[in-house]
Amino acid sequence: MARKVTFTPDEKLWLIHLLDNRLLQHSHSQWVPEKVVNATKNVRSKLLEAITFVYLSPYENAVSTGCINEQLEVFYKGLNINEAYDLLNMTAEQKYLTEKIDLGKDMLYKLGYNRNTRFPEYDYRVRYRDTLSAIDKLKNAEQVCISKTSDQVYKIGFVTQQQEIFSWDLYYNPSLHDVRTFAKTPEQIKAIKKSFTLVTNRVNAATLLESSDYQSSRFFKAVLN
Image (cartoon, rainbow, N blue to C red; front, side, top):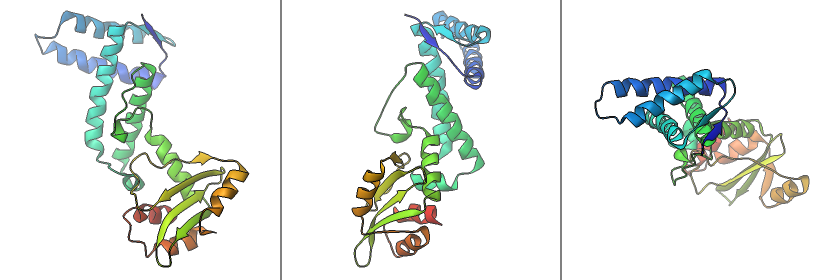
């Protein structure tokens, strides 16, 4: 059964580019089945003619997802980002690659492809833009919650300007897509604050974190400064 897919103009142009590259590869090989070549050409033609949406056969859909996944593998290799801390110091090239990866994931979702793995960067439910947006909210949060022993901060929380909450145990280093804020009611936020040792401002929180030797603390020190 054909699948109806609506791509944005940018998505459509990028997929046409990928299909052109695939057809160029096919032209240099004698072992590509004619069915594959024809399906690739069909998808390209449909995209060029489409105004808003296209109908893709299961095989054309598979060709499209294959082209996108192949390019995403190239982007992942060039990205060289392994944890949330790395997102704070991205180069322009790395930022471009995260945007392209998100674009590819959006397209794969529309094509019905949903391979979720134990590797967060390959999880098609998550986007770099969402993680970066959450980090920006933390950077602008005025209320910071701290739980500590006499000499060590072991948990931190943020109440964002959007009345969202993020909390983290410093025993664990946040991975690429662990940073997420969650909307809460005023009553829930009040209860969450009470679960911490104290609620303070950014400056005091940064001072309290200075002595922390948990690996995760470097991420939060950077967010607070």
